[in-house]
Length: 320
Ligand code: NAP
Ligand code: GDD
Image (cartoon, rainbow, N blue to C red; front, side, top):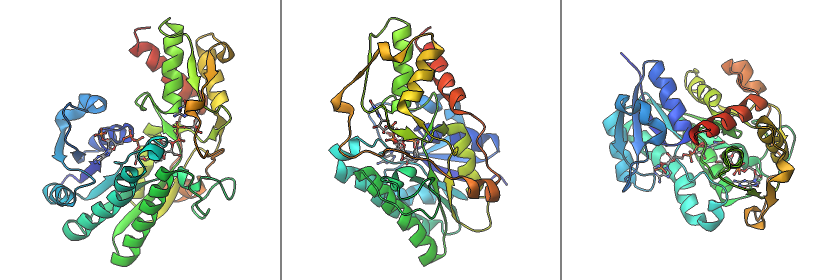
C-alpha cells in the first residue's frame, strides 16, 4: 500500500518541493491549507490535482485534530509557520502562536489521533543567532536574535520533549537558509534576483537593501526536502543540521547575480535603513557531517549555480 504524508505549509516554498518529491516516490499526499479569500496554490498549481487538501489552521486545535483524523498519515511534515524574520518584530505574538505554539498543537493532535506516525519539525539555523561556535552543529547552544527565532527554539524543544515524554517518532531538521526560484520575494536572495531581472529589463532603476555584510549558508530547497524525507526513514527519531558547509555574504550574492547579466551591483544597490534589523544574525555556517554520515545526504547545487538559477528564472518570468 502507498505511504501517506500530511504536509502543513504545502503552499510555501518547501511544501511545494516536498510535495513534488513525495508524489514522485508514490506517496498519497495530503496538503493542509488555511482558509483564504483568494487561492494561494501558485507554487503547486502543476500538481494540485494529485494532492488531497484538508483545511486547517495552526491556530485552531479542532481543525488540526480533524486534519489528522481525515488524513491518517504515516508521515507528518510540519512546515507551516510565519517564516519571515522582520515580520516577527511587527507581529511577535502572532509569530509565537503560529511558529511556536502551533507545533505543540499539531503534536497534541498527533499524540491523540496518529501516535504511530512519524513527525518532522522545520527547525531553523536562526536559533543559533548570535553564534556560540563556528560552524554550528546539532550540539551548538542556541542564542536566538528575533521573535521568530525564539518561537522556532520553542518549537524545536517541544518536539524533543514530545519525543522523550510520549515516545513519539518526532524529528527536527535544523535547516540553514535554502532558496529557489519559488522563494518568497521578500527574502534577500529572491529580492536580489527579482531586482536584477527588473533592472536588466529596464523595469527598475535600483535595488534598496539592508546590510550587505551578513553571511548565510545558502543551499537549494530542492536538495533540502530530500533530507526531511530521509530523517523520517530512520529507525530512530533524531535531530540533524542540514547545510552546505560554506557561507557567503549578501554582497557576494549580489556580485554573482549582477555579473550574470553583465552589470555591476555597485551601480544599482542603495542601502536603506528600513531593511536593517533591530538585532542581526551576522554569520551562519552549518556542519552537515551528521546528515552526511547517517542520512547519506549531500547537497547537489553550488552557491553559484543557485544564484544563476534564480536570476535566469526571474528573467524568464518577467519576459526577458
Ligand atoms: P514559506 O514559503 O513562508 O511557507 C510558509 C507556509 O506556512 C505557507 O504554506 C503558509 O500558508 C503556511 N502557514 C503560515 N501560517 C499558517 C497557519 N496559521 N496555518 C496554516 N498554515 C500556515 O516558508 P518556507 O521557506 O517554505 O519554509 C518552510 C518551513 O521551514 C517554515 O516553518 C520555515 O520557518 C522553516 N525554515 C525555512 C528555511 C528557509 O531557508 N526557507 C530555513 C529553516 C527553516 P499560506 O500560503 O496560507 O500563507
Ligand atoms: N529580507 C531581506 N531584505 N534581508 C536583507 C535585506 C533586505 O532588503 N538586506 C539585507 N538583508 C539581510 C538580512 O538582514 C539577513 O541578514 C540576510 O539578508 C538574510 O535575510 P532573509 O533572506 O530575510 O533570511 P533570514 O536569514 O533572515 O531567514 C531565513 O532563513 C532562516 C534560516 O536561517 C528565513 O527563511 C527563515 O524562515 C529561516 O528560518
